[in-house]
Amino acid sequence: MEKWSEIRINSNVSLLQIVKKLPYAKDNELFGHITSTNRIRYLQGEHNWCNCNYSESITFHTHPANYKYTNVPSIRDIYNFLKSNKQVTIIVGDKVIWVIKSTVKSKQIAKSIAKWENIHLIDWFSKRANIDADKYFRFILSKFGFNQPHTAKTNNWLKQIKKLHLSIKLIEKNDQETSS
Image 1 (cartoon, rainbow, N blue to C red):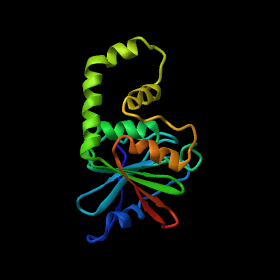
Image 2 (spheres, one colour):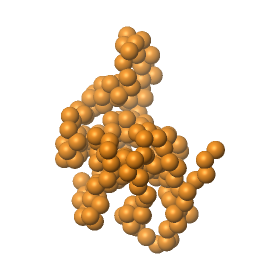
Image 3 (cartoon, helix red, strand yellow):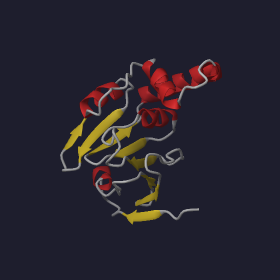
């Protein structure tokens, strides 16, 4: 089992200050969480994948610089966050950091997805034997108005993710912060 790396944080800092201390690796993903005891704990993932499916309330992961969508959440990121009980997820790209928070309305969407999946998921996949999970994520999120942009332009993704009623704060790594 790998050993977690840790970064200690002062106890009276804002989430924005914590976000700016998150680690980043250009060639592979890192993933972890922010603890209630003011620590950033993280592990190294693969080149283009990491295990973000654990039960901490504030999680993060990075996208490597050479990943096509380094500065936007992937369709898998969005689906997994909606389906989780996490309150906040942070996605760190090489230029932009996304802080995504759940809302009452986004939790209702997650319940609707779970209800649909309980009834239809096995049948849906059995009729599509060679389909990958990302195609399913695009399908299910489109039921709630999300249409995956075909480019990595931040504004295109922001507009689509807002349709899922998630609260989003974008932080450019040059310290300019924008809320949405």
